[in-house]
Amino acid sequence: MSDLTPDELKWVLNAADMEARARERLPLGAQTYVGTGAGDERSMADNIAAFQRWVFRPRALVDTSARDLSTSVLGRSIAFPVGVAPYALQRLLHPEGELATVRAVSAARSFMVVSMGATCTLEEIAVAATCPLWFQPYLFDDAGYMAELVQRAEAAGYSAVCLTVDSPVFGWREGSMRNPHILPAGVVWANMPPAMRVPNSGRWLTGGDTWRWAMADKLTAGTTLPLVLKGIVTAEDATLAVEHGVAAVVVSNHGGRQLEDTIATMDALPEVVAAIDGRAEVLLDGGVRRGIDVLKALALGARAVLVGRPAAWGLAAAGEAGVARILELLRSDLSTAMAIAGVTSAARVDRALVTRRPA
Image 1 (spheres, rainbow, N blue to C red):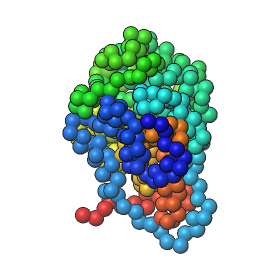
Image 2 (tube, helix red, strand yellow):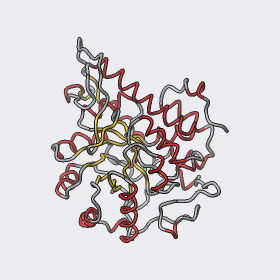
Image 3 (tube, one colour):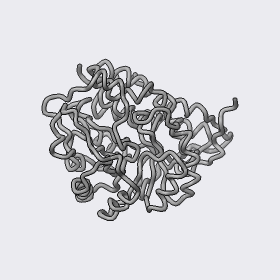
Image 4 (cartoon, rainbow, N blue to C red):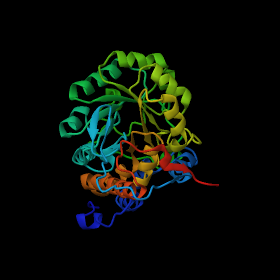
């Protein structure tokens, strides 16, 4: 099935609309890959529901006619506080894969985290980008190849290493067990160790469950790039992250794809922000579907958010244009929410803007 046309995209008004249109275009295995989580998928659902546990306290008679949505992440300016989260196998969803995504992100003047499981090489993605890029490696036991990947990212102009720490082993994903995805002919894991690049091999990285904090220190020692830890949901780990010199943490439970019944990211955000206490940047990933979600996360102390599934559905539905549409919907909804809530700057959102929903 062909990509959505511009006229059709005009009637996609939110992430749920895009998901519905994407599912029409994807085989069952690809739908399952994007749309399912671990166990009974309670964590996946709770990430979305957690935003409803916070409500706005909008201020009246504030001149918001000159709203500024821009901010920065790790010193790099972005037009609005929404980046694209790392997710693998983008050519499973669209022939142009990560290249389409990075072009859309670049046009939106945002930033993108590139998965180690990408179907384009780190260098190919960097050539197509005019936006900040972070490289996201998984935990695995080949220190030499890990160092090689990080060196390649640094040489290609990436601005951070975003180590995913919530995946020591592959999560229990029954949906994918029942309906495994099949990569199209010619599509490979472009940045995986050579023995794993063959599609549909059923193999995965090993040794992730042996990682300790000292190994993250060793990774940092081999690069000038700042280290970001993705998958932090407790004050204890946030404190350790600062002690080990990380530049930022991403409050994330892997979109509910790893450990069932992990705390929702919006519920974890306040304690992580308090523990970090301004000593590193804090981002949030998981459950963001609307611009109002972005504004709530900013109010609770996130500098920016990352979106995964909405961008994936956009890619599947219309390639670069679909990702661009998702980003524009989030940007427009955020701008509208700021105007009504009395917020003039996305980089300076007051914690007083939100409160827990009354029982």
